[in-house]
Image (cartoon, rainbow, N blue to C red; front, top):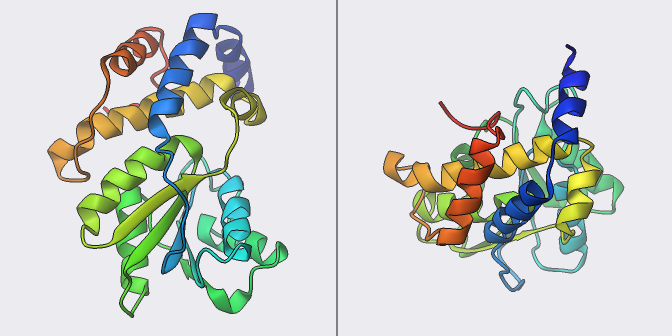
Length: 224
């Protein structure tokens, strides 16, 4: 069976309960921080070019004078962004009207901790506050990671405002989106014990939704 056939097969078995459980986790991952002016915006690299689009819009609104894009590649992004996530994000933001002089590129990070740590190293002056711009379901993990890696900075998190069902259909592989939601929640749960992030409270209904989806086989993005 080809990869496309596998994706089609898995997409067709999304049940109403799977979607309801995934929405619960989606809502949990989003923090609802109020946007305000900060010292710098940091766009976290991924497969989702919407991060760069939304970051460009925030820059044009005057929420930060500088914008860092950070990210190398992962197995899921190398085909789409062969020159690296951060480089493609920069080019896209420039096309959308962001001044090239306002953008810094961090092209080496391969995980969220490195995204934040390497971006911090790139910023040589004093930074009081940052706005982390991520995929919608990565806000909470980005926040927890930043509080661990850069505890003294004032951090606000945001993502493109998009409805869950629109995102689910827009990616083109609904089952993969659910896999990624589940994988991110596993990291929220387990990373504190490894020293990668601060601990976050997870409500019982979110934990139950997570267990249901794991039992249903949405496990391709789980850590071993």
